[in-house]
Amino acid sequence: MHLDVLDLRSFYYRTGLGRAAQRAIREQVRSLWPDTHGQTVVGFGFAAPLLRPFLQDAARVISLMPGQQGVMPWPPGEPNLSVLCEETLWPIETGSVDRLVLMHGLDTSEDPFQVLEECYRTLAPEGRALLIVPNRGGLWARNDKTPFGFGRPYSMRQLEGQIRSHDFVPERAFAALFQPPSNRRFWMKTGAMWERLGQRLPGGFAGGVLMLEVKKQIPAPPRRGLAEAVKKPLRVLDGITAPAPKPV
Image (cartoon, rainbow, N blue to C red):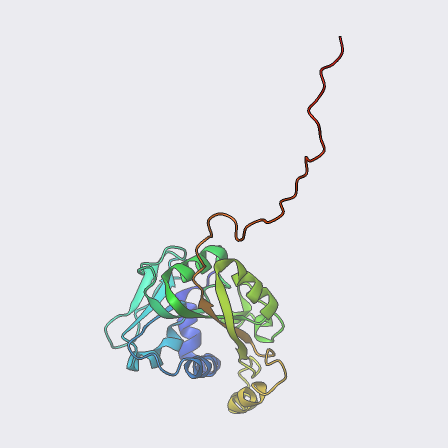
């Protein structure tokens, strides 16, 4: 289930709770990838709120938005870097992306398998993707007043299972959005404190969103012939004589 781009823009840019969510997730993304100098960084879904820090040093930044969601110009007041696309057919050259961020892209897609296929196709060898999805066990997935209350929430085990058939290697897993999804003044003022405390929790997966970094792995070429010589082959037909003619 795709959300409308106008609703997403209104939440992240015009509400206090949305700006707090944007800040908490973006800090985690930037701490994960502090240096993208000379790299190509792409976001898919509604990842635009997380991409602005990369404008400073990345060689190229692109925000892909699926047609079912709609597109908005981004970044505001600057040359547009936002592109409307089919969710399973991206206008990105194969093997050209160094860093890929998905938010409101995998969990809202009608075909997450093919979305991950596009992730694999467009990533460069050893390229990395960051999958950001609602946490099935978190408070944000239970609140339909935020975008994380729509779509398909995941547990970390489910998310890791989703990538197994795509030649991705899990690298790092963590969470964000530990403050409750409430506009009440107390929770808003103490949001930064909850983020710091949440990162210290055992397991670290109690937040509103789960974040899984994966690396593209190039499969080894298939081997031709037997892997090693068979020294003593199993002779399953030994001892069986030729059939005798049937008496007349």
